[in-house]
Image 1 (cartoon, rainbow, N blue to C red):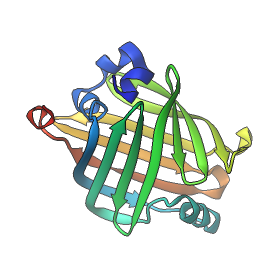
Image 2: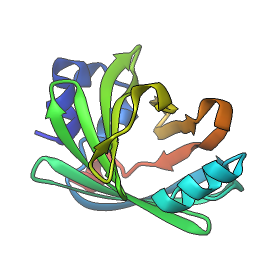
Image 3: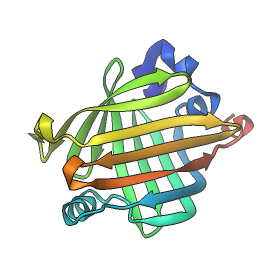
Length: 180
């Protein structure tokens, strides 16, 4: 079993084929694609971005994604232009995924919506301290498949403090034969 299959259960099989393929990878893989990044709008957002290692603004350009999927957890390294971001993902419960990004630990509820995977932020802890619910950023993370590509649209908005980051793009997936 894989992390996302464990978290989603039967819903995993209803995801778009490229989303299933990405989340079925085991071991180490390096994928390439393109990505466009919109950076933080305000000073507080830029400070938080630096603390968390979030990507800097960039026009559509090359994007490299490394995944190491083993033993019920995954390590992701996203290589954006001018900055890389590392996180560790793990299962918390059915439909619940944890992600550690620097000092922040996020909890997401996963949902299959017409073949797309949607991640909904539930909680954040920073340096182990619960983040107040009323200050939770609006986070969106949508993964979908189109043709043979894996597409992503991810972002975080701090409400009255403005956009923290938004990035969208695609990854070329290895052929099924390459995984055999």
